[in-house]
Image (cartoon, rainbow over all chains, first blue to last red):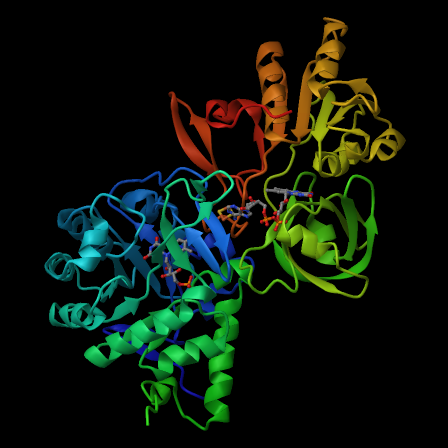
Length: 304
Length: 268
Ligand SMILES: Cc1cc2nc3c(=O)[nH]c(=O)nc-3n(C[C@H](O)[C@H](O)[C@H](O)COP(=O)(O)OP(=O)(O)OC[C@H]3O[C@@H](n4cnc5c(N)ncnc54)[C@H](O)[C@@H]3O)c2cc1C
Ligand SMILES: Cc1cc2nc3c(=O)[nH]c(=O)nc-3n(C[C@H](O)[C@H](O)[C@H](O)COP(=O)(O)O)c2cc1C
Ligand code: FES
């Protein structure tokens, strides 16, 4: 038996394969089809201080090997999440990572503080990088000083492991990774969706009501591998690789370039048990390559 | 809700560009309720990350049928499916049509694939009432003998007059209503078709105090309530509104619940 476990701060994961925020709901949505307890962790959809309605429709558009979305982070608010979804998630043993976002540092801090006091939350992923929120949130992902203020604020507000989710559209992702580590983050995750748009040439209108959105899925995978490689070389804290995983091969790429864990996003829509099949595929690979653990594979990229 | 690999038993071309796909899908058949749908992963379309939703048309023994039309790349790819191929399904999904309220008279209104989407309901309803089918031209009118065989009266309208009355189906509905006995049972309408048809049914439901259940067609991502692609605006008590997911809280809604002002202008 190979050792698939991963540690991120005080968070212990049985397997390195998570489901990415916004692509697996809050738990009940896929519970009939996928045994949640077999997931490395359940990362829930982004939660803010107050309930948010999100963007007008159309909210998604399928592109070549990709999915364009501008959902707009609708969510029931932190109290709504605690009342409506945490009791369900507490029935499972799967670690729950809550993805949080806000329009100001104060909002991030307030959400973090509230979740710190809630039973059944195991870590916070800090979304600074969603391209679909206009009122400044994207700034936290691309402005290094603003980024540090958010991470420091959340760090001070909770004892839970803190995992900033980095924006992909920066010129030096390593600088953000280092800033996260220096500000006390327990790990980092990347990438979020890439700013993107599509146009209907017949109507000359954007395909999304929000005009532009974020691209995810297989199309972004090689881009994500490069950013994860850059980020992982910059820091010693664990990195969660995200972007276009549909099979074990893409997950293994992330691990080989330095990721400690990975998360499956859009592929769960195509095939809900993808995360579990990726886990099995990683175990097979490790046995085939006679490696004792996923940790032994991490960062073993040969460049000469 | 299940995920099931269904074997294609047959694919049959019917009229008007429609196809009927017959699948061996015992899990889907065991659980399906009228108005529910299955989410299909179209094979040989690796560059497409999303499944495509289809109403369940018929479910008998271990066989499931869907009736569909090639309108885009997914549905056109489906037309090449042959006996022996397998199709990955998630379903049955969504909240389908509720049972008829005791003492009410059922009225069906359908256009396009809506005729297929209402078949299971038509079979199950304890009272067989009248069904109104509308389309642009004769080949768009599907399933009439099947509904008649179940005991329904079927009235047809085509916009070009090539079958049944000339014009829109809502005119037939208005004529029928105008001659109805005032003391007859209250109407419970069930509709599936283009948005304009649903909206026209909703208007009549409001005017004549019918209950009307409409099945909406929204682009879908996950189909299970996770991605929030398929939402539509619905009224909340107190004058507000909220998004509801048509994949899990629908696709069937009571017509008064929908904020119709947000919907596009009638198209049929
Ligand atoms: C509940 C439900 C039941 C249905 N039942 C039936 C049925 O029984 N029979 C039948 O023939 N059809 C049915 N449909 C419609 C059917 O799902 C569509 O025709 C089909 O998905 C079109 O796929 P395509 O690949 O052929 O078209 P596409 O190439 O996908 O193009 C169709 C159009 O939809 C857009 N589109 C597609 N997916 C998305 C998305 N996720 N987000 C934004 N835009 C999108 C495209 O841009 C394009 O304009 C049903 C739809 C729903 C919602
Ligand atoms: C529909 C949808 C909703 C998403 N919602 C969120 C969110 O709420 N918070 C967040 O940090 N990331 C969100 N993401 C981004 C994913 O978590 C992930 O970073 C991205 O999809 C890349 O992974 P993938 O290519 O495997 O999908 C969302 C992605 C999609 C497709
Ligand atoms: S299609 Fe994903 S929530 Fe309805």
